[in-house]
Figure 1 (cartoon, one colour):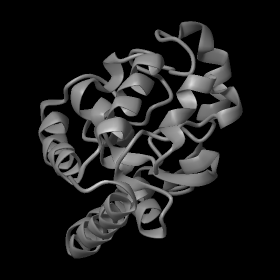
Figure 2 (cartoon, helix red, strand yellow):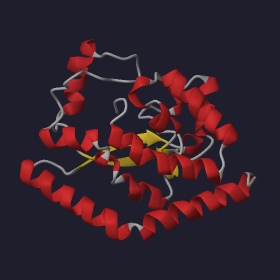
Figure 3 (cartoon, helix red, strand yellow):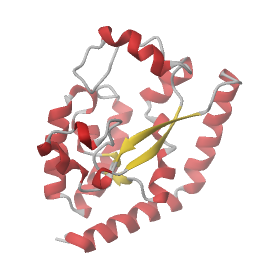
Figure 4 (cartoon, one colour):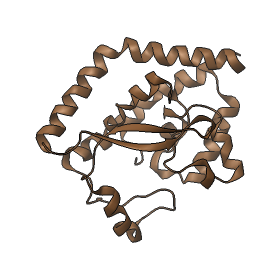
Length: 204
């Protein structure tokens, strides 16, 4: 089994190879979604950026398509009492902040496509723990092990749990992945992700 620095090097090579070779597919899709978002909301931003916590606690700017109204973060404070999950997760059935096209983008996970740029610059990997919006200062000590590798576009949680898994359990899944990660497991999770999204299993 390939491990250590060799695994990390090959993982980065595979990330770049897949993202670059797929450019003719995902770039037109991104441009089309940008156009649709502009038609829906001419004055609104196309992208939503947020600082996230990555490898070794480093903060970086994650890019997503905007799926909510422009003042969504302010409204979140007003709606917090309706939260159906435990902190740090936030979910409201039929969230009023989500736009019409935003519902489709979230349902298909296409709102995550711009993160391919995060992968190109090295902030993220195709497979790994999802980056959190809060800093490592708010992690419990045992949870910081999930910060030993680059965060991913998909991972164990996306394939086997999605929105049905609480944060502590997601961290345990991430740590288990880190302890047993391999190129074979990464390729399996990448291959499995489209089927999970298509089946719309769980919630984002």
